[in-house]
Image 1 (cartoon, rainbow, N blue to C red):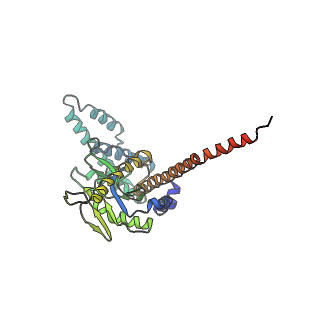
Image 2 (cartoon, rainbow, N blue to C red):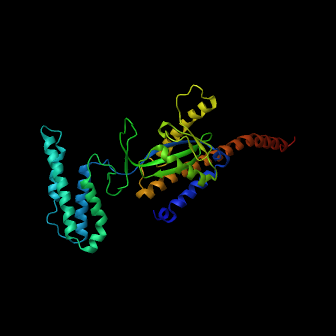
Image 3 (cartoon, rainbow, N blue to C red):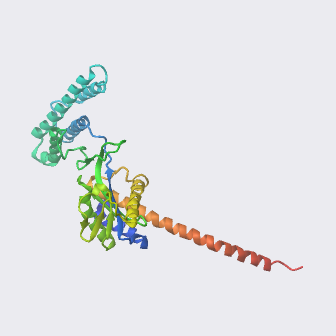
Amino acid sequence: MEFRKRIGEEGIELILKESIRINGKDAQGDTLSADTTVQEKNITFPTDDKLYKKIIHKCQGIAREENMELRQSYTQTVKKLSIVQRMKHRHGGNAIARKAAKKIKTIAGRLTRELERKLTPQALKKWGSDLELFQQVLAQKKEDSNKIYSLHEPQVKCFSKGKEHKKYEFGSKASFLITQKTGVIVGALNFTENIHDSKTLPAALEQYKRLTGTTAREVYADRGYRGPKQINQTQIHIPKPDNNITLIKRKKHRRRAAIEPVIGHLKYDYRMVRNFLKGSVGDAVNLMLSAAAMNFKRAMNKWESGIISLAQFFLPLFQQLFQSQQINNQPEY
């Protein structure tokens, strides 16, 4: 953790740049494929009850740390209300569980306001941001935007990608650029805001120029990137019904699908499936380190296959030479 903080995002980007350079000519294509995915944060599935109970526990912890006596701690009350909530699937239990949830929210508001009244000015300056976050969670409603889904990771956003097995994902948006012919990752950028895919391309292309020193000529993307057809000198190609499409362009659109398994390998083989690093800086660091690790592994596999092919080529020659030396060294009778 201290190492990551010391070198920062700029240092991690230099590692990604080196992983691109080490792949040599394979990373020099100017025709790219683009796609985005969600980098999930290591948080529990957010519900109002969970957030209210965490607020209660944090308020109790602040009071203990400041040696402040609360009018009532509500420890046993919250425990009993939690037991009541487990019975909501029984006959008539749903209405009782709703009343218990409302009572838990009331308790969280009471403790937050009591801390605001009783804390000293120095302590209020120390815990002011936390208390403000608690008030924001207590005030937010179902239809609000920019909601808080986690107390320890308040920057987390909710994404709905239309997946059958996972309706909602909580984390940050990750954008990737890979070369079409070789599949080297030449761009990996994290976005903390839930923005449209087409709006991620300018920043992603700018990072590609920083990492490689060149400008992309063409970018092939899916229909989620509907929007501008050109960004500076880069042409953006989106699939659409076209009777006059050329065979080369059709093949490039099909080749764009090769970015999907790359993202799958990043998630399940290179530790991007769940991000354990804290904050938005942790999101960017985890993303670029995963991409760099995959690039380094690709270069290692290529060198390994080259060494094996050389060994397979020279091994028969050495065997023939060894056999001829044995024949020459045999004694004559």
